[in-house]
Amino acid sequence: MSAVMIARKVRKWEKLPGKNTFCCDGRVMMARQKGVFYLTLFLIIGTCSLFFGFECPYLAVHLSPAIPVFAVLLFLFVMAMLLKTSFSDPGVLPRALPEEASFIEMEIEAANGNVLAGQRPPPRIRNVQINNQIVKLKYCYTCKIFRPPRASHCSICDNCVDRFDHHCPWVGNCVGKRNYRYFYLFTLSLSLLTIYIFAFDIVHVVLRSVHSGFVNTLKETPGTVLEVLVCFFTLWSVVGLTGFHTYLISLNQTTNEDIKGSWSGKNRVQNPYSHKHIIKNCCEVLCGPTYPSVLDRRGVMIEDPSSPAPSDASTAPTTKTSPPAPQTTKSTAPLIPNEHTPDEAKPSIGAGTQKTNSPKEEKPPSSSNPHPSSPNAVAPTVIKESAH
Image 1 (cartoon, rainbow, N blue to C red):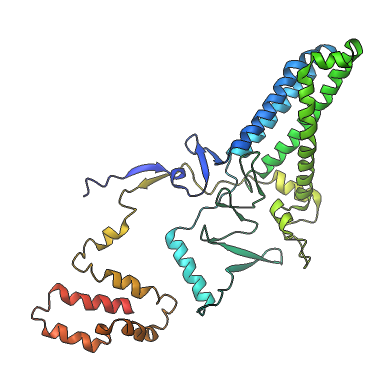
Image 2: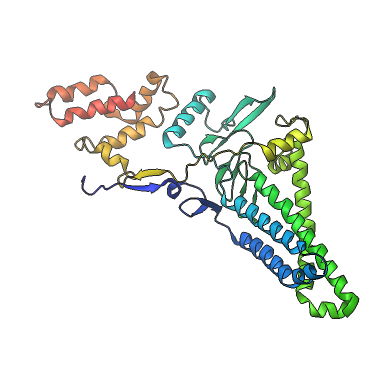
């Protein structure tokens, strides 16, 4: 058996749960739905290519050679911020291990007490104090953890994200604690690039119309017409999105909190994360420290082929006592809420199994047995342990 069980080393990103895709040995992390992200790349690269091919040669000669140079720098910055937002970990929180999840469940059951049948259990919430204000920590039934403040579970990526803002299909990733500043810089620079291209498209058409006429200019430069249409329809959404996030940054608030009305509801609860000053809030969000990833995606772990069946290892030394095993699992399940009162649980087990009503009835078989050291004498002891 030892020769068959060969352990191999794998990267931790290969075993991470959730709906994410990884590339470059775990360095790139994105959502599985990336179709809209490819559309974003096509629109940005396509529009800028038309601008560099049709307008820049003419504007560099008739106005200034600095126009295409600044456009190239702005384009490179937009692409860098887009890829940084799309390929980075937004702040995914690791899920609880089975041992941690069972311990949290025991804590919750001990705190809530016994819940009668037909009654709804109380909500799984913990209260913490932040800046002299009570904030509720909600329990995630998927990740089996109490989420930190401002964290939320993304239904698309199936992960809990720290300081969750929203899931953006245009960048193909969640926007959270670790990539929000890059997302904001991407929207801001994209707004400037769209305005820049749109403005110089108009200038290009006006300069050519002086000599060739407006209609002839549109016929000679079909790329300019396409650029004007794309920039006109995307300008309002991109600039509006940038303005909205500028408003949120000035309040130190997330999109998720704004939609839910966390700090502007009926109770008028104040935002405990705001510094009551626009500059301080902007500095914290945009100039704060870069938080490391807690996933350790490129860490090495040992994959054991026998790990999917741990019960074989536990029952291997006691193969003769394998028949009582189903009885132990069934009898211990209802005793978890009443572990502090084992005396009350004994009659319920006795009603279900008449052959083991009391320790007195277990003694005659052992005394009548001519071989007390046989494996049959072990079975009553296993049942006793399961009852307690």
